[in-house]
Image 1: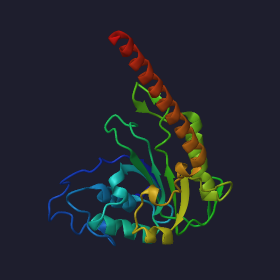
Image 2: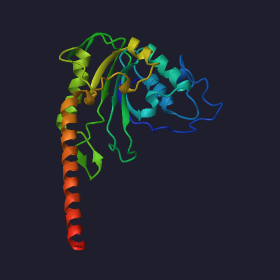
Image 3: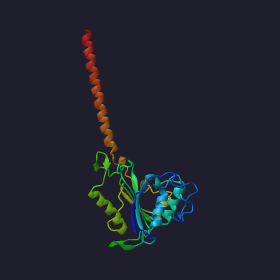
Image 4: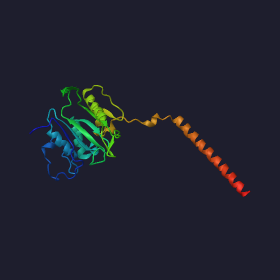
Length: 246
């Protein structure tokens, strides 16, 4: 049977009742993992594609619904095993409105059977075992086409590629708040094996950037002006009525 060295796929999202209750329970593709549940095929697709990869050098990228990042139960157990087996290389969350078939944000998963230091396509890759790259691109949603749909322009595509390849090689990569984070397996264990980027990428609390003293003075000044104007209006109204009565 042939194996893929690399592959990019878009399986159906959240496919329900994809097998009968007693069907495919001992399928070779699930070897070493829990049997994917009948209710949702997301992790069946992951294990299916992983089973087709070259054992020593196979890499695959595929899109899945964001729910697969943190589902519990059987899916959670499969995800835990995938991480402990060091199969997940990168998780990249995309903006909403990128696809005609769904308006939700979806995730690009990259799985890799070989995260060791090696040369690949002329690039010297560092040892990434025990690490996962998280990238959150949901805010990269300003390039609109056909009135509502989002697409990446050439500059954004080049920037995304640079984040990923720089992380792989270790050259010029740095974690960036609200964009990307290289997390260790210990980090991921501490988050109960969730792959939601928000668990790892630093969030900037912009409220901390507010000068509260200056802001309070501004609000108080505005309120004093409103009160002064209101009092002036009341005086003018009283004088107007007094004149009419006299």
